[in-house]
Image (cartoon, rainbow over all chains, first blue to last red; front, side, top):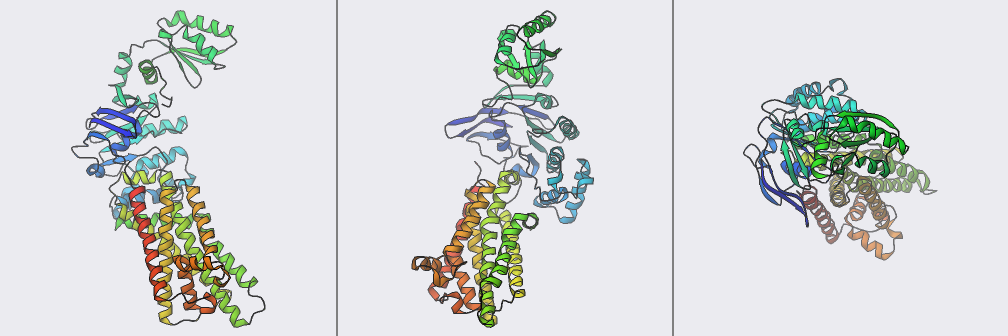
Length: 304
Length: 257
């Protein structure tokens, strides 16, 4: 729980009186663009950074005192590439105070849990990105850790590794473990029981993902995959979008319109007229990225 | 103890598994022992050749110790910071002092290994030393001072030079330049008087000369570095460097922003 949490770097206010309440056993996803303050918030909860103002309590304790029950996976790949998977986990187990014998048994179980037991003796430099991330998540699965903070764990993973990794995160859910997932990917945040949208240091919305989408008022989203992306294409598509908003995606654009059936053939025709081929066009359910875009008029992948 | 031994274990394995670390700390000094032993001793009488090889081996051992402390240690610290390991460890109930102790003990073990291998190669190449038991113990104390001073400088580099390559290159550069300027790699007698003064103040070269004086003789050290004033100054400056490095490391590397 945080109360009026503020963090300033010089004159820049990164977090502005953030009030965050996560219940025991909840899976909370904090979603926002780079520079929105989400990593700063995670680092403060993990006791790596200090707040400028405000109050924090983790299961009734201050973050420093809660270190024994808080597991934090920073954004970077922190495992040592020169050590094997097992050696890396042994290092963390012994840092947590386990004897060599106890650590050996726990580490074996953890490696099996994250599916790396067969690769336990390989150096981490030979691991794929997904394997390395799973190993790093294993560092917060030691017994007794109640709050797990994962900062952008799927960044840089290919789709298959990402799905596998998210499957692992789902398996961590239980009544005793509280998870805080920091992400800018809507599909990742969708797994959570509660999603908080953070922008410029302020939590602008907080709700169950489905409710968040429903309450956003977004009903019809047209996802268009185009042969080219340009300002001309984007500007043309604004004519079909509600309040002139068009969200650029990796493969094309998303248009928010009231009547998909009417708009679709018109969109295809207009794009063809300016020499832009439509590879795929479909009506889709709004995503959390769409909700964020609707609320802020900014892409969640956009850096501040 | 668990936190110290786990950090020790991790750090020593990282030192031993990194080819560049092995090369600069063990390989490079050994190469120079080999080159020095067979190239620079010319037609001198065999006894002088053997002691010259002894002096070269000591200098290269000191060079290895300098590289370990001034380049490998900051490289290791910067690496842990750059890849987020320090952040991860800071989020755990780990004391900075235990982390520091584990690192320093690993560095000490690695430095001892480097020193033993360089001296062993020197012996194999015909290096000879003459000393009494007391001289030997005194030499070990001076080796420890070299280690302490190098580790202190290394902690300062590792704390303030943020990037891994920057930290390693700064360390290697400082090692090479300071070794050349202070008479670790060049005979003291050939240094200009300004650098001779520096060689007496710089704790590493002063301790290097002391070891050479004790194990090989004054003519190879170039002067008598064992005056009370110089010995005390060497110890104090070496310890000061270590303490300053330690304070910088614990204050800035473990600083909560």
